Amino acid sequence: MEHQVTTIETVADTLILPLFKGINKPPNRALIGLSRGAQSQVRGAIASEDFDGKSGKTISLWDSECKVILLGMGKSEDLKENNSRDAGANIVASLGKTHGKNLTVRFTSGWKANQMSAFAEGMMLRDYKFDKYMSKDDDDDDDDTPYSVTFQASARHQERLTVGCDRSAAIATGVHIARDLGNEPANKLYPMEYAARAQAFAKGKGNLSVTVLDWDDLLENKMGGHVNVGKGSEHKPCMVIWELNAKAKDGPCPIIIGKGITFDTGGISLKPGAAMDEMKFDMHGSATVFGLLVALHGVGHKGHMMGISCMAENTPSSTAYRPGDVIDTYSGKTVEVLNTDAEGRLVLADGLWKAGEFNPEYIIDLATLTGACVVALGHEASGLWSNDDDLLERVRKVASDSGELAWPMPLLPAFEKQVKGSKIADVKNLGDRYGGANSAAAFLKQFVPEQGEGDDKKQYPWAHIDIAGTGWGTSTNATVAHGATGVHVRTLVRLINNE
Ligand code: BES
Ligand code: ZN
Ligand code: ZN
Image (cartoon, rainbow, N blue to C red; front, side, top):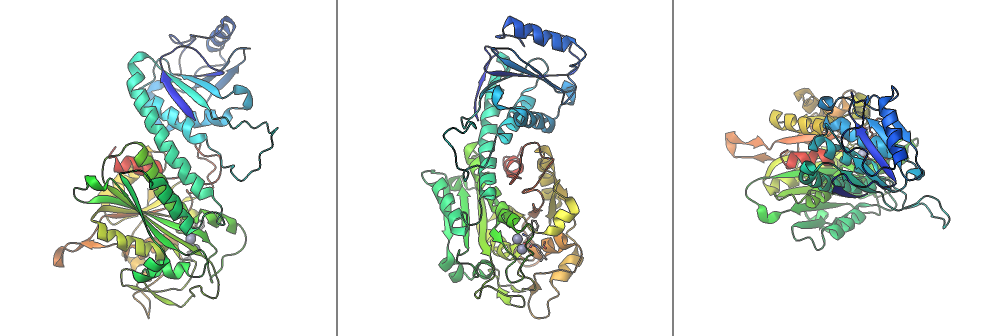
């Protein structure tokens, strides 16, 4: 979507007029640029009982020169950013070919700058499709021209709306790249292909660097989590380390880690066949990390931050790791592998430990980690665990403000006891039968690095976000049609920007 911000002037193919509740005549300047016929239709509709500005109510009016969509927004003082974003997204979802590609969105009385920017953000987020593998016919009537949207508001809003829309566009680009990566099939996107795309993105960007630890580096560094999970596949694993604004380094920095299993067959503990195709999304944590770096770079973020993507393909073969194997992780801790399908926690173990080498302010990992989290929270909220109450509350709040819920879950000693219960290794990669999302979080906690010495030794603040249910497959998220969601790119931009 291309966009521009102007004062209220002409109208394009379609005018979208979002209006608040309680009006019975068009707000000041709402009808500028419309033909006489269209003006009288809008007046009539607003005066009638058919349109009262109730939230979600739409009326489409037809004129030979311009189409007008009246959109009810409810009461101005009640309009939260989350609802405004959804309204923008829903409008884009409802558009058809006849509306054309040139749209005017006209914000009139009652609109505040943050509400307008959120509406624009919703439109941009929803304007997404993943059709790169579909053949195009010459006479295909699906027009690939991007939407060009003019956001119009009064002169006093111009500056803030321009900044807000540019920012929303940069963030939407990051979200869309995360979705692209999530939607890519596993034969096209494997660990080293992700690394190549990361390097291609960083190329020529002076404040962004990407370092790839390839198969040989993983072996040399004794990163046994990656090596073991990935060794059954001809697509070898890798770790991708991102660094933004290294020159701004002044003390600790946020570090975001992503699970990047480009396909999870379960390995020797093979998954059942039904819906196994969905396991191409098992790299969505790393997709979010990629999208986050794109978004932060795009908004011109100035602070120092880092990302770590833990990439591997989990497949069975004669070289694959097995149930019963004891593996060494990068931390030096050994793990008894009781199920090769609990692989995400093994690559993350290496990633978490690696983060300890970079002076973290806090560490957050994102992972499509457990089916149990989907059982607990459905597709409506990510699970959120933390060893630090302040960090937990900050993440919960920015996630909620972004309309990407992250729901607090318990990091209980009882679950740690389960994973520490191996008879032959330091930990095992499986908990008891119930509460699997919690035992997975408790497993990860064993690999969170510590700061300080002696009695002052303490783990870095760390949060784990299980996105198994929210990374894909949502039906209630207005900003997504289907497939990968790009979840938590926006949450983390807010968090890292301290909004
Ligand atoms: N990638 C899966 C988790 C998953 C399941 C994500 C469904 C999205 C939808 C993960 O690697 C996995 O297989 N976890 C196992 C863990 C179990 C073996 C302890 C699970 O959840 O069944
Ligand atoms: Zn698995
Ligand atoms: Zn997995």
